[in-house]
Image (cartoon, rainbow, N blue to C red; front, top):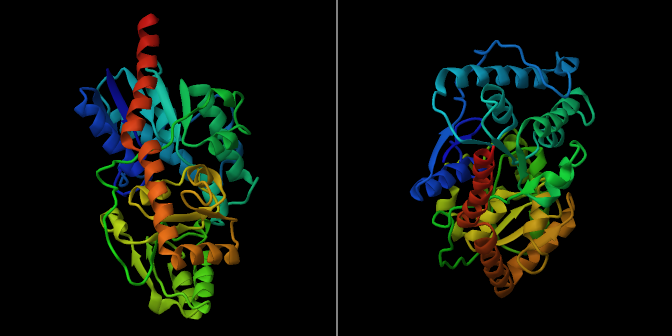
Length: 379
């Protein structure tokens, strides 16, 4: 069975789908499956010119808005690149981005196509202040979900909470499958270490949706309560100057390290003690599973896929979004009690190993792929 994994941009960055799909492909290939990876190079811009139409809505109603126009041009570019470069034939296509899915089904209508929706672009844009909720860009992007439902053979997403989110935009949400992300056990694993001062770490883009201002204010409260710690922020983004200024204002700059973008944070994540990220929304929250696989205690917010990964007080701690005092209290618990911190990390590791291993994802997807191979033979 020959399968094409269709991404959006190349898998250059670690974390989430970017790291999951190539490792998943490697697992399948080692088991004798024929599987290739396809994506749009980032250097391809404004090459496509074919007309774009959707069967469930008229996108031109939203034309003239920057996000919409960029999305449509990228769609055209993906068509152009796929026509030029994709010459093999496949038994199945598994797409990991709406544009990849819609373009592949347009160009290869007779090939069964599975689409995994990994996250919500529109929610990220709203939380980061780039578009207005219920505005034209928001309406356009949410209309894509119905188009996907109409076009692809099987929709899959990464958490039950995100399946519920999609229910507002599709006609038959009960048909959406749920397969949580998986992570290579060889890349994410605990390392024995002892830190005299508790080391906190977060890994994310520095954007408003990640709630890092809440984290810095909570850390300032920890400092006022007399708790020593070092906070490590791995990632880059438009909020970095603002966050550095806030760290200075709160007297935290000497205890906070801004690393910027890092290619392989998993190489030294296991040497920290607590992973914390107070996101405002996460479809799954891959970095929490990665931190758990490294044996860290995890602290997150009661949203989306984070709340499905963490059982409060059992394998991590959950706090409300934007609640500085609650986050400070949770961090105080794990900083002040090393045994409690160790217990949370141990249980988190056990659950992550069982629930979010790459082996589990491969097994689940293998069943889905074989279903479509059987259906194709029957027809």
